[in-house]
Image 1: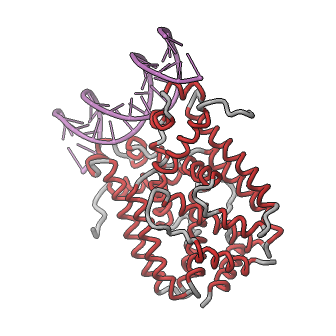
Image 2: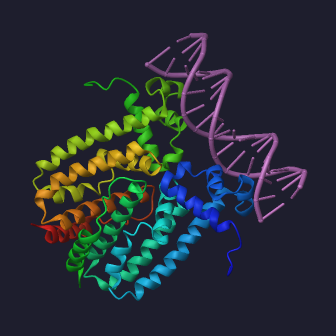
Image 3: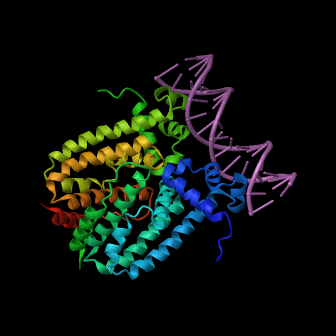
Length: 181
Length: 181
DNA sequence: GTCTATATAGCGATAGAC
DNA sequence: GTCTATCGCTATATAGAC
C-alpha cells in the first residue's frame, strides 16, 4: 500500500480521464489500456474484469471523500463555504473522481449510484449543524449537485456555465446569508 | 403532424423509458424494439440509424421546451417558482425528456450536451428579469440542475433525496426570499 | 410498413508465450 | 508482470421476403 506498486494507478487514471472526457460508452478496456500505455492483457492482469476496474474507481472516490470530509471539518471558512467552493474546482482529484463515478451511475451502475448517495449523506451530516434548517440544508446540497452536474456535462469544452471569480464569490455570499442559522 | 402517424412515437417512448430506467448502455436497438413491440427491422425502417433515433429524442425535447417556456411566461406564480416546482415533477413529459437527454449527454453525445445547454439559456432569459442579480440567477439555475441530477440518479428506486411536500414548499419560499429583486 | 435472416465490427475475457 | 492471439457474445446495420 505504501509504495504504489506499478501501472495499477496509471490504469485507473486513464479510466477516470476517459470517463470524464469521452463518456462511459467510450471507456472500453481497449481504450483504457491504450491510454494507460499497456496492452489489454496487461490491464486484465491487474483488474481481472471491467467490474473490478469500476470497483477500483469507487474505492478511489471513497478514499478521497474521507480526506475531504476531514478537511471540511477543520476548514477555516466553515463547512458550507468550503463545500460550495470545492464543488466548482474541476481539476481537483476528488471532483474528477465524482464526475467519473457519476458517469458510471448514469450508465446504469447500481454500486456507483450508491457510492454517490453515501457521499452525499456524509456531507449532509457535516453541514447540517451549520445551517438554519432542513430547507437550508437542501439548498446547499442541491446547489452543489447542480455545480457538479454542469461540470460533468461541460467537461470537454464549451464556455463555463459554472460561475467563477467574482460571480462565485457573490453566489457564496448569497447562500451563506440565506442559510445561516 | 396532427395525427401521430404510426409506431414512431411508441418507439421514441420506449427509448426514453429505457434511457431513464436502465441507462444509456441498456438502451440498445434490440431492447428498444422489444419494449416498443416491434422488430429491430421495423424500428430501423422508421429510424435508419441509432443516431437518428437519438435526434428524434432531441427533437421531442426541443418541442417540449418550447411549450414549457411559453407556460413559464404566463405562470401565475411567476417564472421562478414555476421553474423550481416543475424541476421535481418526475413524471412530467418534459422532465422525462430532460433526464433521457442528460443520459445521452453523459454517455458522450455532443449534440445532446448542446441541447441541454441551449435549453438552459432559454430558461435563464425567462428568469433573469425576475431575480435580483446574476448571483440570484445562478442560484436558481444551479438549484434546478441539482434537482434534475438527483431525479436522474435516483429514478430507479431509493428513497427520495429530492424534497417534496412541505420540504419543497419551504425550499421554494427560501429561494424566493433570497433572490427577489 | 413490418418482418426474418444475415453481414460486420467491436467488446469483454481467456490462453499461453515470454 | 506484460504481451499476442483468439474465442464468444452482443450490437448496429443491411438485404430481401412478405
